[in-house]
Length: 81
Ligand SMILES: [Zn+2]
Image 1: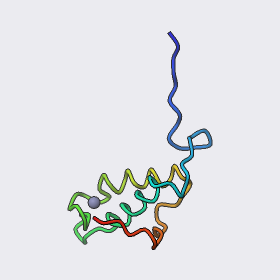
Image 2: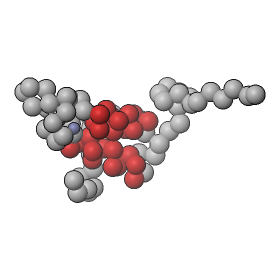
Image 3: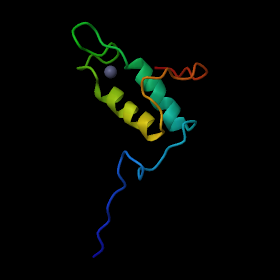
Image 4: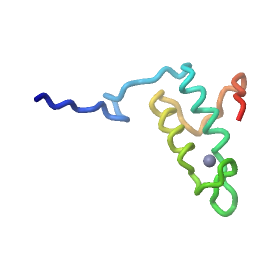
């Protein structure tokens, strides 16, 4: 039986996502909506502990596309909540 090693999520051998793909654009929009916390440390959007799971996962998608998750999303993509 062959052993299959999954691709690493980060690093030079990680698969790259296109920064213009719908997945990455949606992730940046999601990160913008879940990217701030209250003074108590809760996400403004979903009221989970900050950083909330949606923000963490969206940041990982941005990183897979070679983007800095802290960058602002494109203004032309205003997805509904
Ligand atoms: Zn959130």
